Amino acid sequence: MNPSLPFFVLATLSVFSALMVVLSRKPVHSVLYLIFCFFTIGGHYLLLNAQFLFAVHIIVYAGAIMVLFLFTLMFINMNKELEPHKSNLLKGAATIAAGCLLLVLVAITKGAETLPAISKSSDIGTVSNLGKALYGQYLLPFELISILLLTAMVGAVMLGKKDVE
Image (cartoon, rainbow, N blue to C red):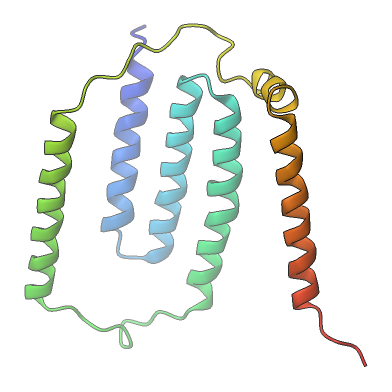
């Protein structure tokens, strides 16, 4: 089997689902296509042997963020009668602006250097190596960030608590 075949399959599915997010008429369908797009991007992390990034990506984006999007879509009541309709002139201007942005991005990447060869070592990007780095070389910054986050959480609870008299 060609080793680049899974990459091209995931890339095709990612681009297709991203296009369907934009082209879908119903907002809930767009969110579902976005969830599928996040899973295909997570598959790219697995191909790069970054299991931890895959897990965090799926938990944070496909889990928490998408639940927030779905809750927001269900909370606001979108009716076609209440939604303002855009003129064709405005749609054309947006299409031209997006095309110009695409041309600029292509021009920028055309002059860029190619990426260095990826190491074939199987231990790069694993959770065990990340844990060794966090609890070895970066132990002090890791603990300081945990104290900072704990302080922020306690402060948010104190600010949100109602005064009982």
